[in-house]
Length: 150
Image 1 (cartoon, rainbow, N blue to C red):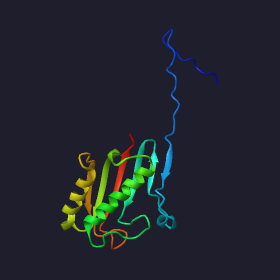
Image 2 (cartoon, one colour; image 1 turned 60 degrees about the vertical axis):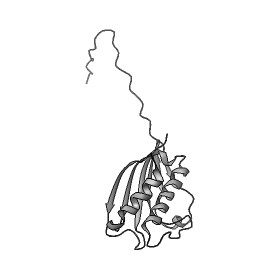
Image 3 (tube, rainbow, N blue to C red; image 1 turned 180 degrees about the vertical axis):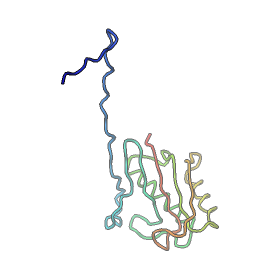
Image 4 (cartoon, rainbow, N blue to C red; image 1 turned 135 degrees about the vertical axis):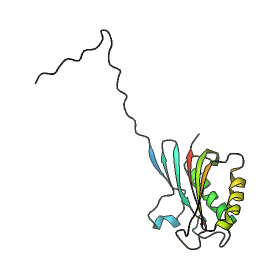
């Protein structure tokens, strides 16, 4: 079968095709040993965007911080977000979106106060969801984030 010639206006060449470049994908590990024994990663970077997995109130050694205290748990969750971002070479000011999960709607004000103190003037877009429970009964708050490294 013979190919048909494509007619183009004289003197015009087709635009060159752009080569697709894959964004670099990288697992982010802040170096906590407690998470080595469970199948999860703390963050994933795609290009300049960092997706921080839901952070709970565990410190770097895996110990619960703030049992029964939403404010203390919120601070620890946000400190963990900061640690994951730092491992990716990003800062808290790079956060563009967070989602917070809380098990007690009556304590939502505590979460808001801690979040405002943590982010200051650079508040990201946010969503808050009241849930019946989190992964462990002692967890009262979980926070996930999306950041774009600047």
